[in-house]
Amino acid sequence: MNQQQRLKVLYVSSEVSPFAKTGGLADVAGSLPQALASLGHDVRIVMPKYKLIESPMETRFDFPITVRGRKETAIIREYYLEEKENDVLNVVPVYFIDNYHYFDRENVYCYFDEAERFAFFCRAVLEMLPGLDFKPDVIHCNDWQSGPISVLLKEQYHISPFYRDIATIITIHNLHYQGNYPRECLKLLGLPDDYFHPDKLEFYGDVSFLKAGIVYADLINTVSKTYAREIQAPEFGERMEGLMQSRSNDLYGIVNGINTYEFDPANDPHIAVKYDSGSLDKKVENKYALQRSLKLPVSDSPMVGLVSRLVDQKGLDLVEQIFADFINEDVQFVVLGHGDERYEEFFKEMSLKYPEKMAAHIGFKAPLAQQIYAASDIFLMPSKFEPCGLGQLIGLRYGTLPIVRATGGLADTVVDVNPVSGTGNGFVFKNYSAQDLLDAIKRALCLYRNKDGVWRKLIKTAMESDFSWKAPAEEYVRLYNRALDKNCGKNGAEQ
Image 1 (cartoon, rainbow, N blue to C red):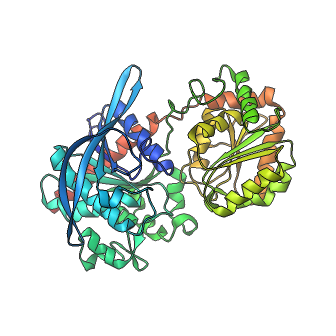
Image 2 (tube, rainbow, N blue to C red; image 1 turned 180 degrees about the horizontal axis):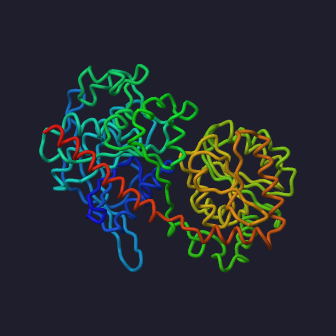
Image 3 (cartoon, rainbow, N blue to C red; image 1 turned 180 degrees about the vertical axis):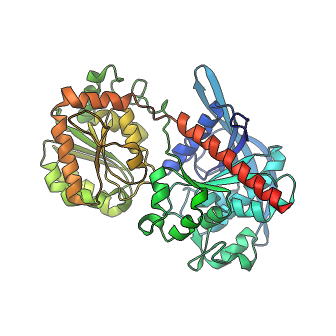
């Protein structure tokens, strides 16, 4: 298919920023469709209408869906995302699937009937399309919550001419989350027992919603090239490495971008002093402002920031192990995040023990996160695994050099600093080792002392790099075209 042909894309996500967000998926779902629209494609988003979403919406229509022998109503509502780029306004329609029984709840996830909620959502996505008079060329699914769309489309809806030529891709944002449920959940999808088979949806005695997407989508991608390789090996394969190997010819990696309008130190309304690569002297004013706000001593000591979910994946056990050595350096440490009680309590206790050197805020506040990115000199991200990671990209955008482990998207986006040549954009360690993390921190702190020389050059280079969605969006267009060609070949062979 011609690269320049205008594509119609339905982007399916269980969360989309700014409407509902629990993690990086929402950021991607709120930014990538707009980048695709800026390339001239007809892109539309669909997500559940959770109780917390209060945006004004137009009600389009409703229809019944049978679940467990009863009728549930799917109400289709519509709003939009807007973004202005070079005086051109990009408008992306967002469809919300509303249902009081499934989505009028306080939180987004973690309910006893999760399989039923998202089985309903997946079928409603397909059922709404004729009523919208919108036939996408490609349905772009994301993670396990929309995984069943591919099997429903290919095994049930393909008999209708309206659906027959629609291609599907699925993006795996984190293979750890798979949507695995008891065998009887197969009935929620309206599929017979013969789909409970290792070649189909069965996965170690359960039905896997993510596997449904991986097996039946035309193409699969992850959010970095390194992660696409890593998940084909046992260390990162989450018991799906054999499946990923079997589809390796259809597996791609595309590194995420970030919303460079939202994350822009030259125009960020949340930070104390705006700056860019041509006014780096102003960056330190943000450190002084945050120090005053957090009641830390106002000084030029290097500030290390950590903005993260507080979970094992993020390498926080390594931080625990080296904490005494780390905090005894000439350093200030600022933490923002929430997650496992173990890490929440650890960081709270350490901030009480070292009030002159550390501040911890348990929870998440977007304005505070951006203040930390702007104020910090170094950003800590020693992940055990990281499919892509956005924190290191945001840090670089704000001239805050990351310390990362060489895994997943961190390996694809952060290049280890060479202090002699002044090349690189961060500090990288390979082994998942507390000592290696401490060595990387000490390298960064040593180089910081030369901040008017090499350090300043590194910051300037980082801030002038392109972390936007433009290049990734172009890669996704090529992926959509491959999916269409593959789906066309399948249909041609069936006829």
